[in-house]
Length: 83
View 1 (cartoon, rainbow, N blue to C red):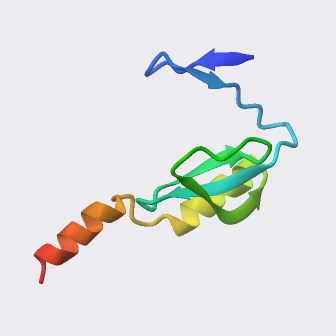
View 2 (view 1 turned 90 degrees about the vertical axis):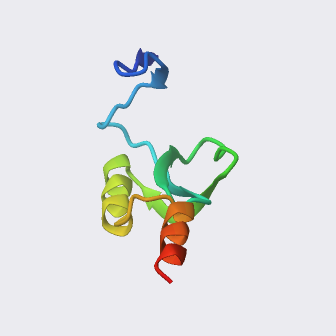
């Protein structure tokens, strides 16, 4: 079953926090993080970060490690401007 995202109208898989589904923390080349169900193939451009667990456990981990929301390319560009 899917539900519609109220902001974009896009269909999204229904989130059921009371299930035992296992998730992975994934990261892209811009060092942005997300979670992905462990029973699905990780999408192109994303790589498992190493953390695996319940949905909330993975989200909590991201909350601790992802302290700078700016994409890596922007951080590098700004760092070069400071030199």
